[in-house]
Image (cartoon, rainbow, N blue to C red):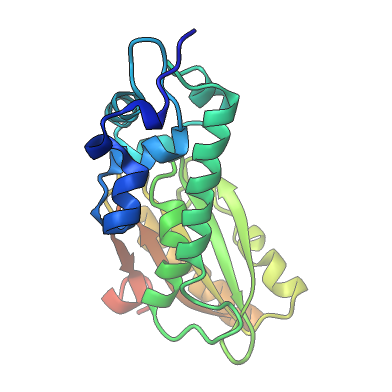
Length: 229
């Protein structure tokens, strides 16, 4: 198979050359992806391949949702290219999450959203996670408690607080995502929050907030007074 390499493109089309001259911020998504891919395929140069892959997958978010094996099966993408893409996406996820050092106190819902939004906003199933805090509101641990359809009938309060009890946490923040991308709380979300608030009082572990993560947005039920009456 003949591969068209980056240096075989016209000079003005070479993403690496443009990055060196103008900076990474000047490059399009396809140009950045082309740098990761390095080579194209027979009849398709690397920049065209990058455009096609982003269009087929719906951008970076779609690429993140593809598992490694599915990505390998895409036209022109093998193990090496897929590994480069997944590694770059993971670096971006970790960088976004490092916006807050977990050793420092959580002071607002926005702090929690910074920790988890990038990771949770594009999940294709509901995930419920708990952020455990010490007496100074520093993060002790982040746990995934449930994966799948969540409602007041399926969520067991004991499971939500299990690790908080074991770690002797002072407080807990519950976070779950809506795969639809819409962060509006449902009636079930509010009812679950009421149950968790009541359980926290009995256990002397305060439910500080319940966040719902959507696509590029979040809602704090405490800020809206939902379930925290």
